Image 1 (cartoon, helix red, strand yellow):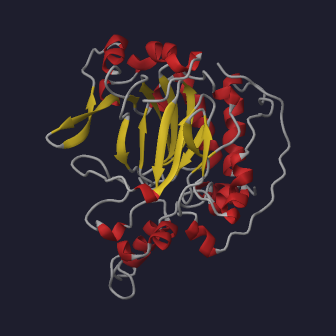
Image 2: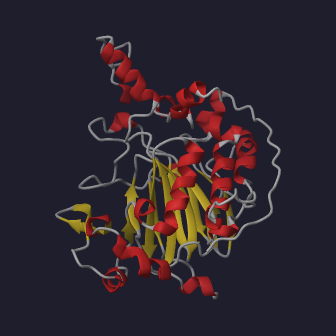
Image 3: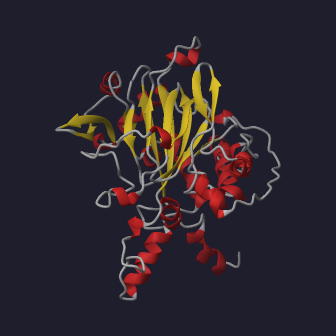
Length: 365
């Protein structure tokens, strides 16, 4: 399934990014061309932001040797995740704040989970955990499969829609070690979904936001991703910024807010913070190779900080509530009235590993 490469030594340089530059990271995209498809490899074009993220994007695919008795398949994932989440630039200026695509391929992820694996494992999931998007009464909703479904049912529905295996990382043995690797690297609640899309879908996923910070790993096939700057929450104060574009809430494309427009290839990795609108399709320019005929299979490994109220905004709200104070800003305005950069910083997830601090202190670690 996965390949173990030789271990590598990394040398990091801590970048210095002034607050104004962090805000400017939400500016327009930097594009390149590849095979006729417009590509965006980072979320901003400013030189300072480029320098700050360059070492993140170059995170290596090599892995250290597995520990004794460790399943061979999990070793490269452990190394890759721990390398990413321990990188000082990602921790200080990337996690929860900037979308980006790694330049380095994770070669061990190519073919890590395929349609053959789906055929074997999809029925391990309860039917409500296997679904596809559907339009109903003016809204977009997940349509789960019926009890007793088969892989043939999944394959048929993939003719017209993307199928998702929700929470597959908890139920599919081949994926469980990847989930555990992410859990151990972040020290935060996580989950893993698998998304399946056949070539030729004009809209694989509608424009929407999610409550999770996610690492997307392409295993087979290709998929186009477009990621946008979050809209100011103050424009729609009655809507959850982390659940836009779902149900009857339709998000509009704003081209000047486009941050990333890229076609994901097997082994490539994309990071999207919570609250960043994104949409996907598999309607790509023809390419004559074996990948072109493959369905797109990608893993989405998410960090569930916001679901579990593990953000600075939630800490602030709970502290004020316990003190008997209103959660509004000092001038009485709601938090959603903050300028977007400040709102994003306030809603940043809590640091990796903070839940382990008490246990480490108790153990003298």
